[in-house]
Image (cartoon, rainbow, N blue to C red; front, top):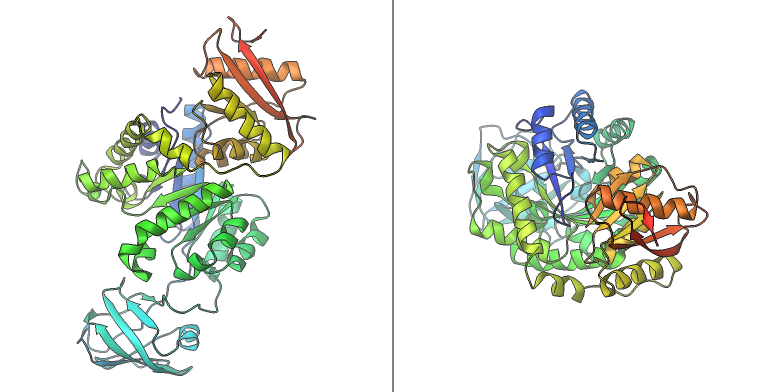
Length: 478
């Protein structure tokens, strides 16, 4: 099955989409990668979901990516003695290390690392930002605050500290166990939540050891300040607009989305736009006009993937949500302005042979109007370079490593096919032409361009570029 769009769709699995039958429907509707949210998934359920996805993969004959999304640290206030309290604007409210149940004047904050990081003037956002506090004075055991935006506060509501860098890992004990379980199930991507610094990514990499791609979720102001370092250490980036919009002014999120997307594109790292893209489709069979524009803008911007969360995980119309996103993406990519916007953001290739060959392949394909660009890759690096170029011609990726093909399912424009490695240059051309023909990307008489590394099977050695005709039998011709 071939997609008629370049941007990929990442669909979250949940109560509405956990059976093999529904997962297959979501794939056929357009989902390329499935996200498993470890906040709501135990290890037995993880194994069942992975088995279901792999059974669908075998049935449809296409590599499907799986992303395990780690929960990350959940910071919450303690309990209240007599139920919810109402905090009034201008009132004093204390957060402290005392485990006594709270009241309208104070509450337990079971996170000494937060109290240690606070300084006068810092903000505290409670319950997804519905209640806002400003620190007046603080110590390592308590923080006296002023209520800036009041409201109802109840047990165990979340705490965000946008002005403070907390001296704690992005991984909790639960995350470490979930990470090992996900790697045991051979998932393709690990998403790390609440990244603050490059060290958070390095910590995960030590455990992953190349068994999966590492995706950094950008949802904290501290990550924005060190964005380029985080991108450099990550294999992919997610613009997690939900928590980003809690910890930063909402009006800044669209600009940050563009900033992050363009930075990831320059680095050649896949970038995913997530959160509330078709939120109304949780309960309605059609989206709002504003949601359609939101998805369209992400596609226009050149994002590698757009993501569905509750829409596909817990909504009433999971299949319709995926199909709607697919239709929006296909329509945008046919828009006369789309290509000029994509091309305007293309960055210069790095001074390496592999980058130069990928840039040349795109340029030759566009000049000669070739039917497809075909990349041979073992590690996936060659394919990601081709994706970074955003060529007008389809990009077919041939890899002997099924894990590589699955991981590349997240990247823009890549049509991945698992194939044994070429034995010779002639075999390489024949195989590339045959796959381009069989996958309906090229017709007899059309030409394709092939990039590969010689000697074959050597990762990171892209050094060969060939133009070939597709013969009447689908083989390489002259």
